[in-house]
Structure formats: structure tokens, C-alpha cells
Image 1: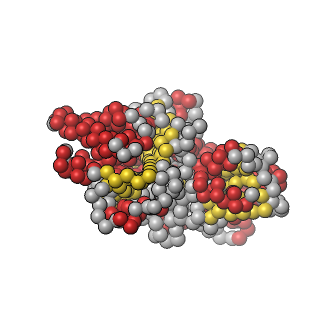
Image 2: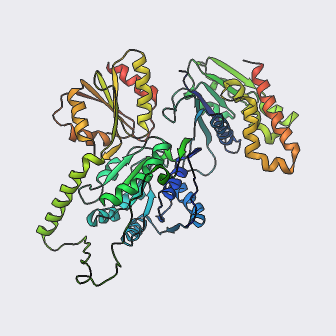
Image 3: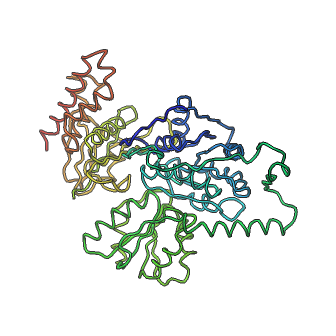
Length: 361
Length: 188
């Protein structure tokens, strides 16, 4: 067994893409499939740099459709497989991701959002929320973790493999170009040394024995002949997805009990919100925040309770309301006023958030 | 608790602003401080103004980019124009005194404007190749985000393998840090 790059716990200072590559190695991922696109390229670079030393494999495909399908193939063969993409690559990858949803395949996809629509910028946005949570011709049977810092990129990349293999739904780590390219500190560790067990993988196909005689046949389908069949399958998936949602959903909140205004944000924007809320609180303003960590499924119960109590909400995101649409669906019926701070394709600073809050309160 | 110091460094590609920002960030991290460094990047492979955003503090840094910097260092004519958007009433604006045709572009709302002859010092006293290290000395002195000794350690870490082969380079780089610090110290 090849050694692992990290022993014990140690503080590192590096880019987010590097963090993801290390996390995948430490999560015992076996193979990455990918096609280059900024700002996720360095995930591939660092993975391939480490691959020979730690017994990992890499396949560069001809495009993202193929990267997605080969990831699907890797998982069918029982490999802890993952891919990473962004922007137009994420668009192309929706077809294989739909197949993974259809066949309940635990693929892991890291998305570093860039500006959209189309080629747009290679820099940053939060405009791939709709695509990542609900893309493809399906119902969005996926788990999406939206990270805010390098520690979370490390923690949730490891966690994504376990969530995927435990529940058998495609699982995403949704970062962005800022997180991909910036350098900051984090503590890296070997999950097993922390008592975090990696969920074992298993092959879907190529098992020993005669199907139907020595073992039950594996029927993994993405094609159906009659309406009733697919209807039944989707109903069953819906039931299972809804059942696991409460234990998968994660969030953070602060000061929502007495707040005149609760700011809802996710990902890197949450950093600005947290900073702004702490400043505004110091200035005596009753402001709180709610930050969904999972964008799919959302922490429905907690969001509903918060929105039912709050006088006003401020939705802050680097898109024109992609997170807000998801949240609104959950809090339907709440009477809180909804204010917005939308900066599509651009970062949101603590100054921006504080100024918007002061314009409301 | 003190807020993070916010720094914008901008210049032409090749002037080394990104490596300066990265070395300072790493030096601060080595001191156990919280640092966040993010370069601007686009589709261009060369050309364009290169901007580095750097924040150093004692607690986790908030948003990676910010609206107003505590200190802006602009090293080319275009960089002066590009970075005026990050200047506010509390900002110290530093530029190279050798830049030409920018008189009307120097921000008027800055707390302080410092013109330092870094380019001239580099070519007259040291070598143009350590221009960015002079700038690093100036940034470190003006912001106190790390000590000058720590900045030298960070350079040693980065370029130590070159210093092994040619120890004169070490003196040159250390001298550049000192001269950069002196240039701003005289004006602060």
C-alpha cells in the first residue's frame, strides 16, 4: 500500500485546487477523469503530480461529456472515482450526471464556478447553482455541498465520497474560481487517523458467479419501455431522497432568534456576510445570518422556522437569484420581506453587504 | 480585534507583483497569522495589468476581494489608473516616482500619496532584477504585516536554492528589502 502524503495534522498554506487534489488522495480516491477548464485545471495538475507516487490513476478525456461518462464507468467498476469541471464543462457534464442519477451511481464532481452564461469569464461566480443542483433531464437527485473556505474544501471533498457511496446519489463539491485560486491556511489530516472511516466501494458489474443463479442479477438501467416503469422508479428515488434529506442537509446560522434582518448566503459570499454581521452587531444592529451548506437538499425545517420568525430576509449571492429560487420554494408561505443583493459574476465584499443592510434597516 | 490589513499590488506582467504578494502571504502564514492572497486572472496569457489582493490579520479573513485597500502599490502607468478604484479616504497610495504622464491619474481622495524611486534605486544601486524585492521591503515597512527579518526568511525559503549557488544574490535581495523599507520609512 503506497504511503499517504499527509501524516498527522498539519497546517498548510496553498490554493483551493491543491487542497481538493490532496483531499481526494486522502479520501482514498483511486482515479480522476477530467478535461481541462479554468479555474479547475490545477486539481488535475496536482492530482497527476501525486498520482504515480501514491498509486493513483488519471485519464484525460476528449471533452467533459466523456469525462463524466468515464467517471460513471469507473464507479460501475467499483472505483472511488471523481471528476472536476466548471462553466461550459459543467453544462456538458449534465448528460452523464443524469445517467448517474438514473442508475444511482456515486460519482463525485467538484465544480469551481466561473462566470456565465457561456464562456463568459474564467474568474468567478455563483451562477452554476441551478445547473449543479437541478441540471439534466431529471429531478435533481443529488447532494451539493457549497464550501466557503479551504478547510471546508478539504473536509467536504472527503465527505463527498462518503455521502456518495453511502446513499448512492451523485455528490458535488461546489466551489468557485476564488476558492480555486486563492491561497489561505488550513489543517490537513488523514481522515482515518481522526476515526473517519471511508465507506467501502463495490463493483456494480463484473461480479463473480452466474447472475440469477449464484447471485441476484444487477439491473442498472437508464432506459425504460413503458411509462409506468419509469414512474415507479422515480417515485421510489423521490421517497429515498426525501428520507435521507434531513440527515444529509447541513447549515450554519447565527443571531436569527432576535434579528430584524437575516442574511441568507452560501459559499464564498458567506465569508463576507459573516464579517459584515459581526461588524453590524458590534454597531448595535440586530442582524443574523443563515447559510445553507448543502444547497441540495436544503435544511428545509430550519429554513422554514427561521423565515417564519424573521421580519426581513436579505438574499446575497453572485448570481441573479439562483440560490434565492431554491430557498423561496422551501419557505413558501413565510411573510418576511425579501430583499436582495445580487452581483452576478462578481464577488461580494463585507463592505457591500454592510452597505446594503444599512440601506434596508 | 484589529481588522485585517488590506493590500493591493498592481503592475505590468513580469514586474513580479504576484510573487511579492505570495511571498508576503507565506511569510505571514509562517508567523502564524491569517493570510489570504488572490491574484486577478483572466483569459489572457500575457498583457494586461496584473493585480494581487492580499489580506493579513489575526483572525480568519472574510471575502477574498475587497472594495477599499489600506495600501495600494501601483508600479506602472496603467496600474495607477486601474487601481484608483481601490482607494478611499483611509488608503495610502504608493507609486513609483519614475512613472510618467500619470499626474492627473493619482487619486485625490487618498489619505496619503507616496512616490518612491524604486525603479531608479534598483537600476542605479542594485539591479533591475530585484525591483520587486525593493517593493516587497516597502510594503512590509508600510504595513507592518510581517517583520523585515521574517520577509528575508521567506525569500530565503523561496530562493535559497539559487543563493546556495551564488551567495551574492542573497546579499542583493536582503539589501533590496532594506532599501525598500528605507524608501517608505523616509516618507511615512
